[in-house]
Image (spheres, rainbow, N blue to C red):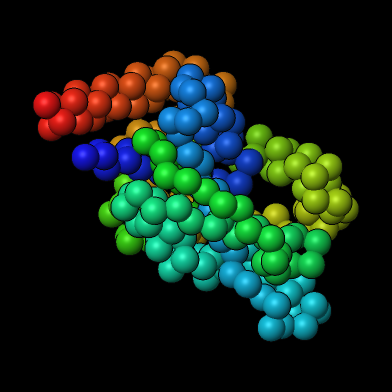
Length: 217
């Protein structure tokens, strides 16, 4: 009988280094072992709204996410069922018609700024991680990402940070740190913490595989 996957939540502010931490952990294992589910893919569909209204979306607020679908997909993966992960198009500010077929794996990493904000998501996680990085580093990383990858202007990124990102971080993201089992300062640069995480995952997988072998004997 297949063992229940290990579900790991990696949270933290925008630009904190969550993705770097996640990729660093994934590099320690074979691709077939770890699956990454990004909360950013689960922004709510806004195709029913005029484009002008979509421009006002606060992407750093909990209500921007379709957590019902995210939770349903994680539960399906835990139950060894494939899913179709949605894709969000930032240029048109709504969900794309494209989907990504995803197969279950032994480890599921759920990564996003607000994955520890919803108790239903937290209840699905075996390990909860919060990546804690200073605000000045986070804003610089966000500037570089949004300008290079999302075609944003410098003024628009700064305006969004001041009016949405920073207040939402203080109100919703930072308080979720209390739910973390592990806090990783400085994100992907903290190689000791990443080594500890990788070792913990290896130990859990080894135990699951031993149990699976025992049950099949």
